Length: 75
Image (cartoon, rainbow, N blue to C red; front, top):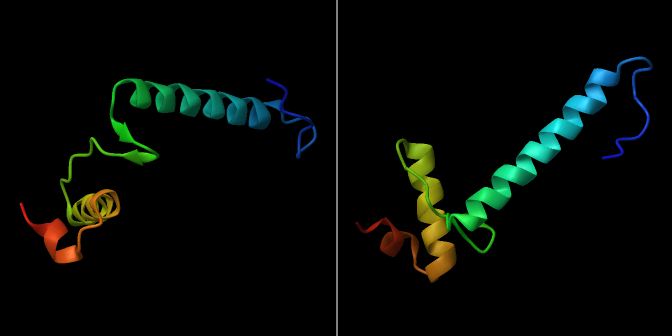
């Protein structure tokens, strides 16, 4: 992967770290898609263990099903 010139001259670790992160993100994204943990561009296999994640799960349900906020909150 060509990463281009360094922003800080002589600091090759910055660009190589960015390239590694991009590759690892691609691998994990492809893995999640192949394991069926996505619906379109949404991550659907999520454990809603706190308020923030429960709200995210509710918004995902609303988006996929066109449900109202009250309907999406139903167990």
